[in-house]
Length: 229
Image 1 (cartoon, rainbow, N blue to C red):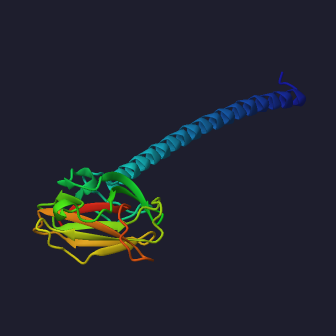
Image 2: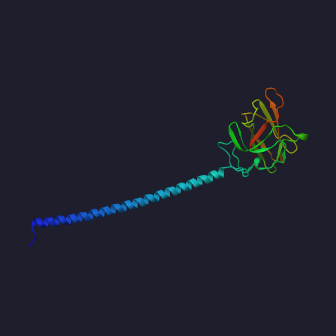
Image 3: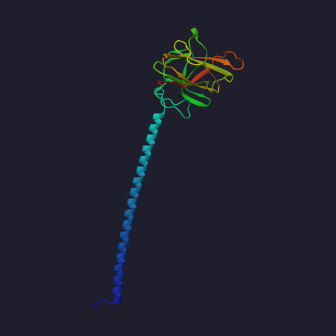
């Protein structure tokens, strides 16, 4: 005998309930799978972004390293330090002088609150014995000399001091007009040294108030540099 209507309704409800439970379980499984896939994709994207960030950082570091000057290569120098952009030459601070009569020192100096990492500093003592220069360097094969000439910021008793630097060749012939500087007022020098074998430098000091000779203070050639052009 067929079941009563109420019995059939209970069976129908039971089947529907089982089906809903099964369907809900399927949806939950699908949601779990989708969430897992989303996590994998997100993790992959994050990893990829991190890799790209590292690559970009490395490239920036390489570019920065390529732009930093060394004493030997004379690569680009600019920004917070002083001097022009230099390429393809040599800082004189990396060379041995052919004549050192004024206690040459090399390394960083500051003039007008600007740092010049590759500098020459020597005493402004005037011509030496037998009219020899204070300092001299072999510059054969180079065509251009560049430097910022001035008095170091830490110089003592230099408030009223003027210093005049003469640049000459191996024969003592001046290559340009003498350069006169004072504390806080350096001067940029750009000099054609084509055909010059030895670049000579002589510095003399004077008191701007008394006009009397005042030697014995330091003069700096900031980032003194020679190049082929």
